[in-house]
Structures are given as C-alpha cells and as structure tokens.
Amino acid sequence: MKKEFSLLLILFFLILSFVISKCKSPVNNESYAEPDTIDIFEYNKELGRGINLGNALEAPSEGDWGVTIREEYFSIIKKAGFDNVRIPIRWSAHTSVDSPYTINHNFINRVDQVLYQALNNDLKVIINVHHYNEIMENPDEEKAKLYSIWRQLSSHYQDFSVELSFEILNEPNDQLTPELWNVYLSDLVEIIRNKNSMRPLIIGTASWGGLSSLSDLDLPEDNRLILTLHYYEPFQFTHQGAEWVDGSDEWLGTIWRNKAAEVQSIVSDFITIDQWAAANNIPVFIGEFGAYSRADSTSRHLWTERIREEAESRNFSWAYWEFCSGFGAYDDQAGQWRNFLLNALIPE
Ligand code: BGC
Image (cartoon, rainbow, N blue to C red; front, side, top):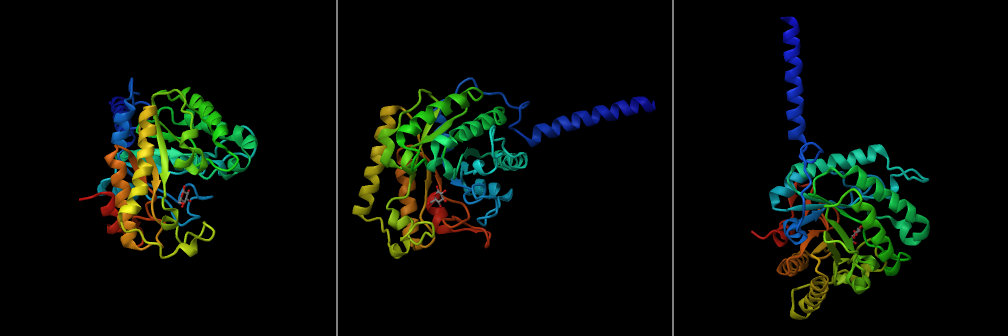
C-alpha cells in the first residue's frame, strides 16, 4: 500500500512538473514545433508596433546606464498596445577574451530570462548585436569574434519560437564599410541558417543603419529577411543636446512643427525606402526612431506621430527608440507613460 502510494505520488509530481514546464515556457523545445514555412510579409505585419528596451543590456553591464529590465515592463508594454520589443544586447562585452569567444554563462542566462518574460507576454522579440564598437574600428581583427557570437546564438536559440527574430548587427559604421558589410552579411546569414532555417533575420545598412548606404546593400538570397532602417532626421532636431553627440548643444531649441517643408523631406526619404524595398521584394522594419528628451514635447509628439504614420501607411513595422531612458516614452520613476509620446505611437 505504502509502495503504491509512493508510486502514485511520483506519478503525480511527474505530471505536475510536465504541466508546469508547458505553462511556463511556450518557447521551449517540447512545446514548440517550427512552422513549415513563413510568409515574411505577413510576419512583418504582425511585428507591427514596437519599442526598444534601450540602455539596458547594451550598456557595458546591465544597469550601468540606469536601466535594469524588470518583468513588469513587458506587461506594461503589451497592455499599452505594442506588438514587439527590440532588445539591444552588447554580446561582445560578455565573451571570453580569446577564441572561441565563449559567451558568459550568467549573461546568456540573464538574456534568456528577459526573453521568456517578453515572449510570455505575447510580444514578438528582436535581439541584436549592439554597440560592438571594436568591430567598427577594426573589422578584420574582430570578424572571428562576431562570427563566433552568431554561431553560439544560433545554436543556443535554435529551439526558440519564431516569435524571436535575430538582427545581425546594429549600425555598422566606420571601417566596417558597405563593401565589407555585404561580405559579413552574406557569411552570417549562412551561419545562422544552419540551425535556424525559418527564423526571420533582420538586416540593416552600413553607415550607421541609415538611408545613405541603402543603395550599397547587397541582399543575400533568402526569403525570410526583413530590412531595417533607423530614422532620426532631421538629426539636429532629434539629437539636440545629446551628450554623446559633439556640438549638439548648439541645436537646442530646434523645433519641429509638422510644416509642409519639414514633412516633405521625411516623405521623400520614406518613398526612397519603399521603392527600394519593393524593387527588392523585402518588408521593412524601422527599428529605431525617436527624439531626445531635450527637445520640446510638442515637437516630439508631432515628429513621432508623423514618423509612425509614414511607416504604417507603407506597411513598415517599427520600434520606437526607446522605453524608459533619455528618449523614454515611459516614465519609470512616475510609473506612467508620457502620454504625449504614447498617443503619438499608439493612437486611441
Ligand atoms: C544607440 C543609442 C543612441 C541611439 C540614438 C542607438 O542606436 O545605441 O545609444 O541613444 O541610437 O542616438
């Protein structure tokens, strides 16, 4: 009798732990079957409206720049009406110094924890390689490390649901020229595809991820790519007073009032993006746009709303830069959204 009871108890706990594991993680191996195919345009539509969890995991260490991601952020973001979160990550600062550049165990565990929190809130998630400054200065020397990071990430995340997408590198610039970037891009898509055949891959342009080198971009042959561009024009408006931009104090007081001439240059940029994307049959994600907190609120509201409208009218998905730091749409101290920004992003 005692033995039967023990067996029953064991069975009960086995079933319980199975049920818990299913509930906890919709993204793990057992509960997730990779789809046979993905319509990347449909996927991009679902990517929809998003926000960057900036200044957290892409700081040298999380917290260094004043943001430590908290679980509740994801329900706040979801409840406000967003569909995706982009999570910038400085992997390059969390590997062993020498080859094979093993990613630190605690760091990847922390990223996993954040990803589960986001995915469990029914948000699509984009992770990238962010602030890899050394590779911009010395691409030849750093290339092996970038490739190794992606080999590890593609293996580690291969069983995560396709709600997780990969963005290969944030804002290539400097010595990582458009020509070199095309080579790295093609290699990296191949590396990632080895273990992630269906996962959407987000790829951007050289020259800081902007429009200026769009025409230099060679798209790898792959029908699950999304093109990303960052949009901060006019820069003197969006980056006025930005401490990391030399001379930007002189731009303080620059306003943006949705006037015909102001709108026209933005529209013309968006037309260029749209035409290029149509010609290359690729959907578009505006992965960053935002105006820094030292600009006036009326201008920030009008500009943010205009960029969102220009994107959406062309079926571009987007992610605002960013959640709760210097461009923040959310005031973490007050525990509330800045309505002049939220309303521009998610109209009622
Ligand atoms: C950078 C941030 C910066 C933002 C706007 C991002 O790509 O990672 O540090 O605040 O662009 O300049």
